[in-house]
Image 1 (tube, rainbow, N blue to C red):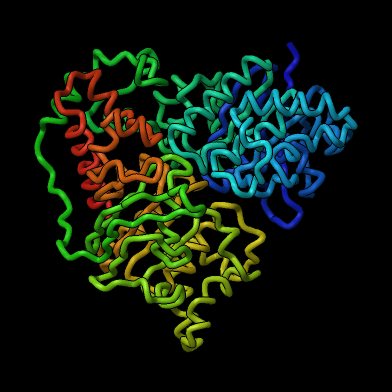
Image 2: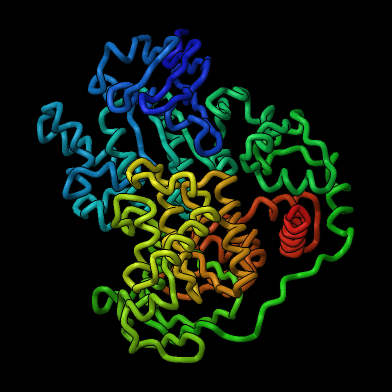
Length: 570
């Protein structure tokens, strides 16, 4: 069988760069294969995707050495239009992919370009909408959909054209865990049913491995570090050496002193052979207690009987009650469209509640303007493109201080300090447009942190971040939380993030408060996880399979152990 994608001694250097981004790339992908590509930010995996879908060399010019073939043909001779007929790409930033005024129009765009008859077009649009479960949304505007719904519209838009290769760039970045599972399930079904070749580029390795992949290609510093089966990769140290997060159940087993082998089939916790590891794991868990973080009793934020509706009679939030204590890191979790982001907008004053009160340090803030609330409460939105208003990075981060009349010398010092902490100092004189989605996210976090707020609300703070940058940002947030007692609220779909960094989790489902407990208790409760579209942590499954009596306590122990290790490293 001939490969559908083939790279031979391939290197690529962007026109504006001194060093090549891809170096001596060699691999083949065959028709019907499902391949996962992982690697840290800046490793070259997005550039590799651009080579496959034609953005290199047609949109991003540079120097190519070696050769590569898509469908047996040289992409340079095909052109980007011909390549788009072979390769369908679902972007991480779905907003950059929408063209139509309605979902139906957007899905039909490729068919309109091909002059497909309207009757056939409608039929094909309905078929593909049914397949990705968005048939009820065909008359909606793509802009008013949730992150998960937008992802499905983008998938439908590339599937409608019957391409041979589907390329997914960070498909899980903006999805809640259960919707992410559905997306991975859907990608798996599409691969098998339509017999297409599927390539997934994703940071959330454990979530992608919910369904089998044929191979995992690991890229590091522009080179292929590994190209092997999941079981072989997970029993090696390649992921750790490249700064890629391995599945949590494997981390726990390693903490217990277990040596993971390929024969134990580590790809899925449900089917992994654990008999040789059980005793060691139980001994580690029973080895001793670890101190928990102490939280102040002082309340910094109180939400009292809060209700909100966009349309009268259709409540988005109903009678929400919870408190946030000073110095706490609180996670707000729940499915796409549950009302989490709406809640943050109400707290910040962008939306006015129908009823209820919001107290900041014991004072009702209903009379404060958005600007006045912004002095005390900083909000970092999920989509960085909705926050950025300046062309240059320095100017964007400095803006909040400048409009408040801070002296230029102090502005520069505070901006530079913040950029260093967020890993953006080398780019201080760059235009924002030159940054990746993840880097733009860090710019928006920096622009709020520079203001020194009392309370920081982050909507999906780590979406699109690799494990190294994710850890850098979260460790920084943890540092300002502990050093300066800045209270942090995180709206998140990332269950790992919630487990690792949150002291408490508030769960919202269908506009109602479903749970207010520790992350470990929330993520080991099947009823809550099911209702809120969360995903039970794989640590829970590991505890059950190793016959540990209290899985929630096991998860708590794991979290405290991890924190202890991080503090020792510091």
